[in-house]
Each structure stands twice: as structure tokens, then as C-alpha cells.
Length: 409
Image (tube, rainbow, N blue to C red):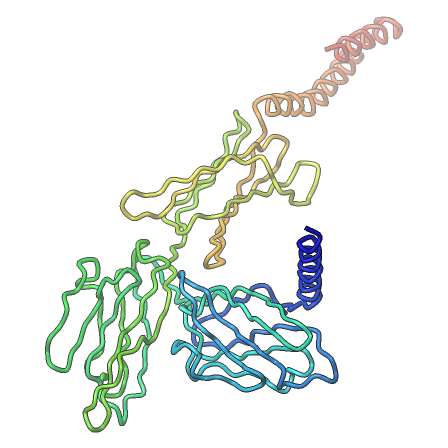
């Protein structure tokens, strides 16, 4: 019994020592996440604590990509020696390790000609004589973006290094596998998806020079954020086919400007309403206003905005209204976040009915009162001249009475 307890104690002590050793050896990442466009290059970096006396001969590095429920080896270093046969074919010839910084406690991997399938979780496992650990980071690779306008055309460029190679076949497709165009040296072609029929143009006279670009006409909102690429197969000068490969991957982003901005003011309800039509994607609407007692433009925060999407065109119409009480002018601003285009309208606000009535009475008082006073004075003078026989006191008393009545009125 005592022997069993002693063994358990030794086992716990050993396990604790191993855990402490593993825990004290930390592998960090320079960045937890990276973003890059396809065909660009990137450098992934991990750091770890190293002793000055250690050498690369004691290093074991094993880095891999975890994506789509599969694991692909990115880089393998065993006791200071690279093991290229372990590397997945996806990364063949595209990964280089900067060995000069290994002694500084850095794992620096340069990955060139990125592909969208390189996206995923990268884990680097490190083991030395001092212990082991791992660090992980996320990489997101996106296809380059090409902008297009609803109703317009967009060119998806693609140039191949054809000479001295020969183009055997190629076809364009979207990420859902729909075929836009297919060409084969033998004359056989695959059927085009209905949504792309009569919408795609290529340049056959330039195929021999490697230009297999395609133009997509009559762009619609349905083309937004679609990714297109070409699959290509080439032959060498001996007509030996080379493996087919993916080329020229691009994502199309579609936009449309909002049009026909109309700004109206309802003075009775003290509200301004702004409308616009035909835009894409959803716009951002803001309001500014200038109060009667100020020249500064103020942001209005109580706007009520609604959007409606056309069932056919899928573009957006916007209606927004805001209170304009106590404002002299108001401005509606509609911003397209994709194109950074802004349209705006400004309206002057007329006075309310009560303000107009007060202003009307004020104008009457300003113009009528001086005329009335002049009339009273003229009457007094006339009365004085025509009634010279009467006592001056009576005349004065009469004029004073008239003036008092005028003031009272």
C-alpha cells in the first residue's frame, strides 16, 4: 500500500514538473491575424525565448495550416535540417524560412504568391532542449477586387506566359461552378450557364499572345461579391500537356449611385423629407441644419430613415425625414459607402403660420402707426388754422385728446 502511494506521489511530481516546464516555454505570434490579397506575399512570425548557448541543431519546428477540416504541412525543420518532403504540395516552392533569426528566438516564414485557399489557422509547434510550445494565428486571403457599376461592363483581366507554351484549353467560372466561357483547341466546349449567356465577351485574336481576359456586360446586383477565375491548361513545345491550374482570380463589387434626390419641407408639420432612388448598396443618410439664431451647421440625430429594395433590380430607394422646428435651413446627405460618393440637397425653411401672422401684424403696426400719427398732426394743424377764433387752450385740449386716442389704438 505504501509502495503504491509512493508511486502515485512520484507520478504526480513528475507530471507537475513536466507541466511547469511546458508552461514556462511560450511561443508567441507577432500578430494574431493577417489579411492579404491573392498573389501578394506575406511574412508570418512567431517568437520564443532562446538561450545564447543553444544552436539551430536542437530546434524542431513543425508548422501547419488547418482549414476546411484538413491539415496541410507548411514547414518542417528537424534538428536544424529542413524536411521538404513533408511539405504539402500546396506550398511547394512558396515558403522560405529566415534561418538567420532563429538564434534570436524568431520563426519567420515568408509565403509568396498567396492563394485564397491559403486562408485558415496556422499553428507552429516548436521544441528545443529547453522545452516546447506552440503558437497560432489566422490568415485571410481575399481575391483582388474589381469595381463595377449596375448596367455597365467590367473587364476581368488575365494574361498567361504562353510563349513558348501552347494554350490547350481554358474556361472561366464563378465560385459556384457556373461556366461563363469555355474554349478548347479541339473545338469542344462546355455549356454556358443561363445567367451568363450573351453577357460575356472574349478576344479570340489575342489568345495566342496569352490574353484570355473576359468582359462581363450588363452587370447586375446579382453579380455583387462574386468571385471569378480561369482554369487553364498549357502544353510545352513538344505538345506535352502540363497540369491544369487556376489563374486570375478576382472578386467583383457592384455599386450604383443614388439618383433623383428630392427634398421637401412641410412647414405645418415642421418636418423635412428627403427621397432618392436606384442606389446600391444600402446608403448612409445624415442631416444637418442651421438654426435661426446661429450660422453654424448642426448634426440632426432624430431622423427617421427607411429603405425599400426593388424586387427586380435589387437597388435601394431611401426615404428619410427629420424635425426642422426652429431651423432656418436643412441639408439631407446621402452617402454611398462603397464608392465614397455623396449627393446632398438643401432647403430653406419658411416661417410657420403663427410666425407669419405675427410678422404680418408687426408689419402693419410699423407702417400704419407713423401714417396715423401724421394724419393726427395734420388734423391738429388744420383745426388750429380754421378755428383761430377759439381759445388756444381748447385747441390744445382737442389735439391732446386725439393723440391719446391714437396711441390707445
